[in-house]
Image 1 (tube, rainbow, N blue to C red):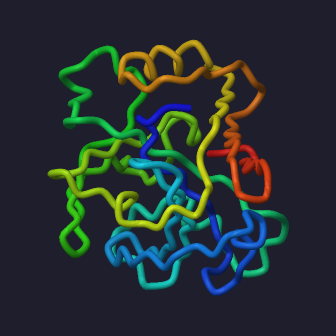
Image 2: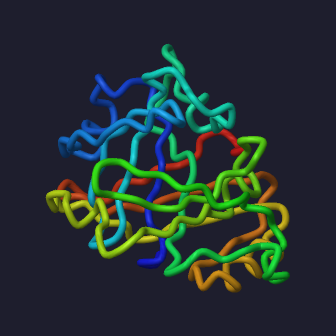
Length: 212
């Protein structure tokens, strides 16, 4: 879709399993823990500034705004890996209260840090995803450090990202205002579809259930 897509999140039932590895045909490197949000992840490079992040709730959450993505990864869930949400990268934070073009609330900016990586991320106060997950959360990295640059290139890349929503025109205006390229098409429910290129051919990740 665009290099402005920072990362895609996948709701994983277990990081110990290899469902996503088997699906993509590559071994995902170990990521890290976000104790504040109660998540533990692995990371896969999709481009110089883009990565895929399977998340699993593996520790006690220290923030009440535990997202639906984290809650979605429950032991016993069946089916292929499920795309949960996206994040769009901005060069600097933008304040919704100072930017009337941003009609869909993505939440306030919150600071995060892990090791020498630090960033700001928008998190809605009720923990829900913007527009059912179709509008990206926003992320702004401090300095030049980015996790994708540290990951091995395993030959997987993001070819396209499709968005669907009943309020497609409103979402398109927000994407355009943020400078995030891509098209949102009308659909009965919020849905995401990511088309990936892998060493073993094309693969597609979908939000198999309606988001939100």
